[in-house]
Image 1 (cartoon, rainbow, N blue to C red):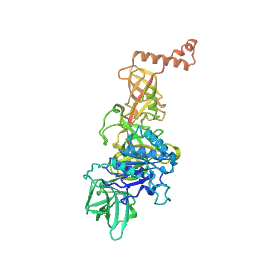
Image 2: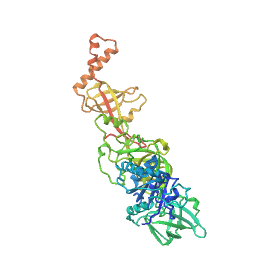
Image 3: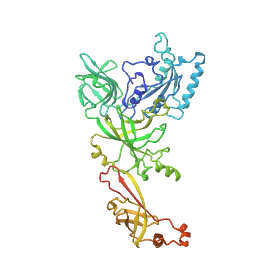
Image 4: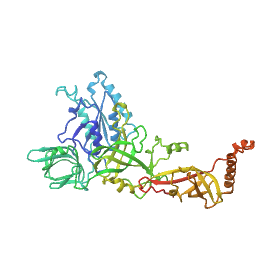
Length: 533
C-alpha cells in the first residue's frame, strides 16, 4: 500500500470524499501547514471502486486551543459518510502554557471522546502534537512535538485494502504539468480498473483521447498500474492548463449528465426541512454545481418494502413528496399523521436532481447536497443530505425524452357537497369544481358520498360548476330522506317562510352530505391524465 500524507483544508475535503487522492507524490508535510491550518482533515491512501468510498483512513486535525469548529464538525460528518477509520490529531499544543498543557490536552481529549461517542469513530486514537512549534516563521531547529507518536499510531492503523484491477479504468487527477521533451504528466489515484503503456485514455470533460506514453510510480518507471495505485501518466500534445484536476478514464466509459436520480438520506445534523424545488450545492464526481431537487418515496403501501441496493426500478409507481420525509419534517401529511398518533416513514427515499450545468461522473458515485452559502460562523451544519447516483440523464432534452418514464405521482383530493336528489339513482353536486372547469375531463371518475354510497361523475349540470352523479347501487333510504328534508327546508328558507319551529330546529340539521373525489396524476405525464385504482 502506497501512502503519502498531506494535510488538506476544508474546501479540499469537501471534494475529496468523491474525487480521490489529493496526496502529492512528493509528500507535502504537515509541518508546512502548521500555523496556517487550524483545523483540517488528512487522508492516508484514498482509493476504492467507483460507488464505494475512496478514503481508507482519515486524520481529523483539531486546533487544541479552539476545539471542534463548524468546518471540523462538517469534516467529521463527511468522514462518517465516506470512511471507516479515523485518527484525531490535537494540533498546536505548543500554544498551551507549559504548566497547564497536560491538563488542557486531557480536557480536550475527553471532549473529543464525548463528541465521537455516538459516531462510528467511537474509541478512535487521539494524538496531541505541535507539528511546527512557534508557527511557520519559527527556526527549523525547533523540533516537532508528538509527531513520532502520531507516525506510530498511523502505522498501527494502516492496513492493506483489497483492490480489484477489473472493470473500466478511472483515475482522479489532482495535478497536471508539463516536462520539457517528455510531454504532459497527469498524477493521481486510480479509482477502478487498470492501465498499461500504449492504452488510450479519455479526458471526458474535454472530450479528448490520448495514448499513454510512459508511467511512473514514486519516481520508478512502470508498465502497468491498477486500482489503488498513485501514478503519473505521461501523454503528448496536451496543454496542462486545460486540466488542473479532473477525471480520466477508458474512452467512452464516463458520461456527462444534465440530471440524475439518486437514493439519499438526510444528514441528521442539518437543521430544517429538505424542501422539494429547493436549490442545493451538489458535490458529485469531481465537481460541485447548483442543482434543484424533487423528493419522492415508495407508494405508502410499500413504505417498508426491501429494495435492491444501488438500483432503481422504473416499472414502479412513486409518491411525490413536498419535502424529504423525516421525524422533523413539516409537511401537511406529517402533521396529520402526528395528530393520528405517529409518523410512518419510508425505509427508502429518492430525489431527482436537475443540475444548472452538466457534470461528468461515474454511476453509483457519492453525492452530497449542501447549503454552502450559509454563514460559516453560524454554528450550523451546512451539509444537508448524501446519497448514491443511480441513474444519469445524458440527453439535454431529458424533460421530454426521459422524465416521462419516471412514474412519480401526486395524490389529489377534492371535496364537494350534494345539493339535491334527482331520483333514486342520481344526485346533483356542487363546490367540487370551479365555474370555468371543463367537467367533461372528469366524466367517468368515481366519487364517494360521506353516507357511504359509491358514485360516478356523469356530466355537468348547468353553467355554474354543478354536476350530475350516478349512483349505480342506488341511494340508501336514509340518505334520500336526509337530502329530501334538507332540500325542503332550504326551499322554505328561500321563500322567506321561516317559522318558530324552523328556527328551533336549526341546531338539529344534519351535516351536509359531502362528495370525495380521489385520483392520482403523474408529475411527468404530458397528457395530465387522472388515474384511479
